[in-house]
Length: 458
Figure 1 (tube, one colour):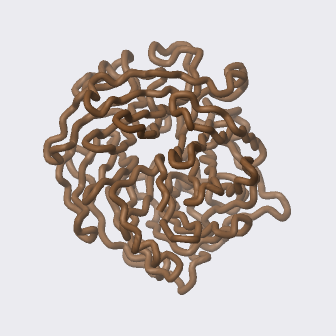
Figure 2 (cartoon, rainbow, N blue to C red):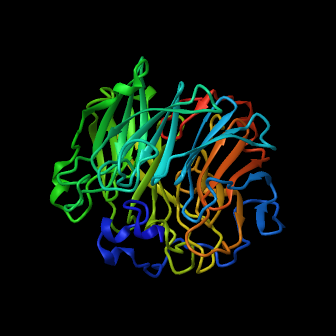
């Protein structure tokens, strides 16, 4: 089972007290998901074709199934990045490059076999970076299973048909996710990883929360760790695991928001090698695993998500409060974050469908705050948080329960140049389009590239 392997997203018993993993009945007055699987905040009803159900304003444009060498039981789709007419798709088996010049007919250009968990991917210039969160026998792709190495792998993808491995950086406790902070000819990468593990040769204590890797663009093979800022050392002796799960940087505003398992953190990154804590948030009542963060375009709000159960549980049901396994919307007022509201998908999922808030991105609607987000087997949700206190769903896409059993569904769902791309763990790459008066202005926004954890204004 994957849940026996993943340190971060799928091991809540390691990260927090075991009692926190159990769902509690909703308290009086708390928001809960709707009982009917057909209810949604989207107007105009729903459309069902085969095992796919969408709101009437969402169209399923294309699906590219997993193919060899990424069609095994352990070859799960993970994160996405974009550049020009290409999508870069991570997989536990390696990564693939897709030509999306025609979004209705995406085409696989190349697939690089490079096994590791979890192979989250970013793209900058001609460099592609992978996060390796699993001890391997060595840095290169053909290294056998082992206990000696984990961290970042770096590839030159100037030739899309034939990517080339150029180097790697070993990091403590590997790299569960990573975040790019460009600075001229140097690319800084923040490495997020859980830990420590006292008996692990790659993850020994103590483990600082962030590791900063410097990648010179003209000599990526010389990449190295340049800092290990321990932004709140008091956590080392706490009940929570050290490390962060995910960091989103907004370099234009010198800000980053970090989801550090037991805390949400607002950071000043005006010096990218020495991030400083502006504010630390803790909410043990509503949040179990602070998983990820998204700024709105103005940098005046942050959405933090809670991955209740670590991604392996069915938390989108009537027995789980609407404030858990959900998104919390915070307004940034006078430099401090203040919580305003929560959002959770309003469609109840089946007991065998793992479902919780996961990776998403803004839809670039000028003057509005709109987001698309994956929910594992809960599918893909498009929601509006312009009113921070009353966010609402405006569209969705989902399939029925995965017939193979186990963990499945949409790992990441991001908007890029008029379309939504969803990396489904078992079913491959989905392409969606939302046609709605609220989101239509986003079709006028053209991006040259997109890495969700490095936000740019539009």
